[in-house]
Image 1 (cartoon, rainbow, N blue to C red):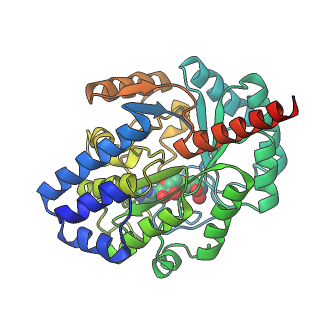
Image 2 (image 1 turned 60 degrees about the horizontal axis):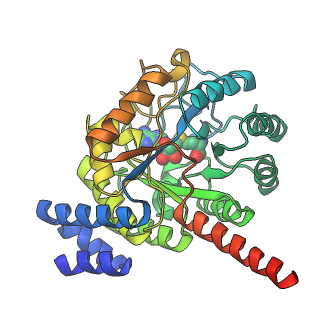
Image 3 (image 1 turned 180 degrees about the horizontal axis):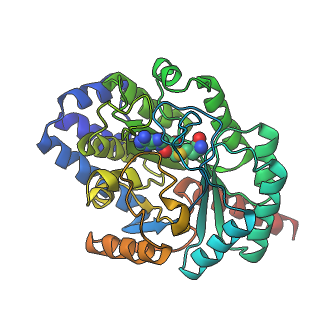
Length: 364
Ligand code: SAH
């Protein structure tokens, strides 16, 4: 086992079979070794910085019906809400005041937010705050819409692939197609977004082979960001009586993702913080380097319940801002309020810039 961990650390590469072997045989001691390698790898790329993103959950209205999700279209018990573009802008103002320089706009698949409305909103935000980064997490749309949103100022796009097992994906997503989601991710990358993929751990029926496939898919896609969180059952969904993912299994996947896609930005997810009071701190020590404090207005935050008992439901944006800062520092890391672009994005931009300079000097 130690050879395998060492190999992952030294080469950033494992085969599907090696990952499966690791997942099936890892002991608590091995896990500590894995986490320490993941931490060292993160430090080599990003130092001890943890980037903060202000998360605005702007609508819980959704046309999709994902079996695990508390805001799925069939859940008639959810009290639905939709912030107006003015209210979203107000969240950005407040978030900017609190020091955030990335806003993540996340929602169910709510088509009230047409391409036109989103383009207007993005332009207004970018005009007011040109130096910030905007991340969208609004699900599947057409390529043309993704292009317009990018043109209007969206910098990044989060869309977890959820699971790389086609069979499991199809069981969990009666209204969506496996290939469509992957096509969206490829299109987003092609357009020039910094792209985030990711998956849930502990889904009903998920096997080590499926999790190994998740990592292999990420190694192929090379996303800028990777979100990994435990599945947490929601009682008003068809999976309400299922078992959820564990903190240990999730941390192992976070650490392996850090070793295999070493330059990625990886959030310590709210779902991990929900499973254990120190879940996010454990994730920082296992390779995560981003956290997304919620800046959704207190009046609606409890309604954005993808799963139950989600943390911070009664908090105000300023509570989350300083609570997280304290946690990051107590865990031995440094808060970074900058835009925090991904390593590969910064690297490519720097390369483009240098080659441009070279052309200029040739012409001089
Ligand atoms: N509509 C957007 C945003 C989805 S919500 C989109 O399609 O991308 C963000 C993420 O929450 C999902 O991608 C999913 O991985 C996660 N999620 C949803 N329900 C969950 C649950 N019950 N437990 C844990 N994570 C969940």
